[in-house]
Image (tube, rainbow, N blue to C red; front, top):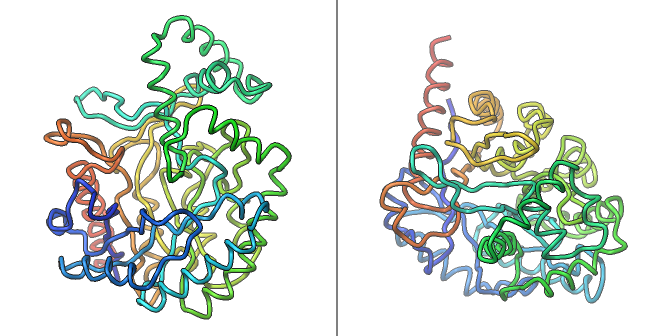
Length: 390
């Protein structure tokens, strides 16, 4: 039976987790990007080749780019957005020249991933990422002071936010703001006035318009990717619902079906993320995966535990609300129809053991992810073994 390929996200030479350490985790490939290049600018061949050489020198392979960031001008179709699309195409050409042919990206406006707590303490003493609807409402209503913000949140979240606004210290309020601002993909640290300014660019952009902008982008870049043999993989919204009044358009079965149909090409595919999609209890993850089928180009595997009022935290990879067994079984079925291994990575991980005392990128600890990868590899082999006995 053909198996998926285990990979590992690495943030480059400044990542606290080294390539040598990654080799010890049973990951065979690397997922990375040239994070030092400003969003929208062309990735030079020399810089790509240098990074690839560094990875291969460590005995690994560069399997997936995560991400070639889509410039905000493309999402809003303002400014020189056509020029940024042309630069995107040139970056794809340069990646193909270095034989790197899976490219992940997202189309989340302004914000990338959003959490309200990056060191949520679990009963066993480990730390996880957490999303609290009332804390998001507190930020939106009282710190960001967005007009009519309360209407975007549940009545329970608004009521609790008012209570917490009176109870929280200034330091607690600032910690929530700092955590939410972590999800803003910018070359420089943004503050609340900065995010207010960015939100203005989306003031008159509806969900349908943002969908049209994504479709336009895909119609421009997908033919280039197909010609180059590159697989494009859009990442779902994280979390999969509107945030701060911004429309999110990669959150549901219907959203993903629209994207696949918008440009019907094998190059136009999906980065299937169980954590992002799994944060919405209404999403049927195996059904979404079956619908995507052979256009699953890359996979993020992590779990979330649903709580009351829409809150969730990131659970161990084989625990939580996502049926990881059903997902892995479906993935292996799809893998048998593919000529090349589908790359997957353990997405996020708890902060445990020695990593509790180290500086780590939120969610990207060494030991927590290694624990997750070991569990996922064991699950994969267990399912594969049962298939051999039939």
